[in-house]
Image (cartoon, rainbow, N blue to C red; front, side, top):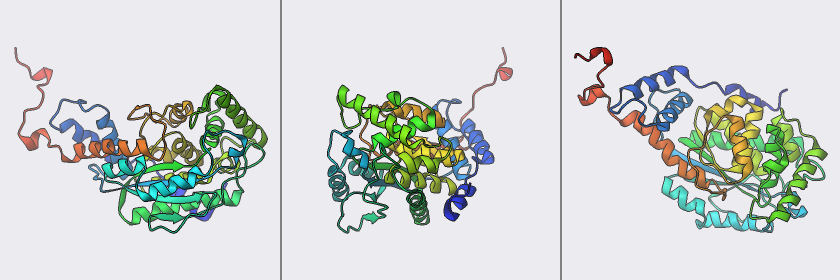
Length: 361
């Protein structure tokens, strides 16, 4: 079913990985000055990157972290250990350079683009802040849809436009991060719906709920699914009924990046829920996804497994913000550099492994 001209055009531009480029990358890996397969997952990752770019020896230049923020009406149900006014406060912290993602993105040499997708407060103008406010927080998903169909489309289109702008400015490697008090609740619902898993399993402690709080949160997720009955095969319907503005914008970024043949690093649980929305819109988009780390949120592993993604790191993190993705950018870039910058046996004048049929007794 058509969604909108921009979204349909983007989805139609998403293609499978380039087999020719992957074959070229695989052949080069076998000729580099190392025993076959000795770089392990770096080799597999470099071949995926080649397939995404459609180039046998891709090179990664500019790196960008898209950090989207939004609020959630479901916080009125008492599902978070923190109040909603933490969301705008943390956005200001991002803009001031004081958050973990600022430190980690600087370390990775990546730029941050901060998006107000739907914070329930007025934020001051700032040169690093893009205002794309789709609403002042979503509606309470435990009693009805998070947003209208029009707003869900606007979310995806906003993310696609942001991805296009950054690619036009030279971005080669993307990562997605989030901020929004209460956003693990819609993420739990999204994960449960898409993967067919019980909310009792997909729902975690978020900002640090105790056992009683966790049980209540899980009941709210169940109620949201029962009330809204989202279609697990329809990404837009899921976003509209149990999603979030920042989640929808990130889903659009995933689609836009995949359509432009660039890799995008998936962060934690919320970033993974946004990836699930994009995957539901077009499963081929996931071929451009690289899972950064394994969050301690229980639903994250379920979402990654559903998309066929294997995380690069497991550091027991659950911060969000794109923090795990920023760390994984180093690994992604290293994989590409090993493929392109290492010398082959022939180039280095080093003897290759002696084959069995060449051994003379």
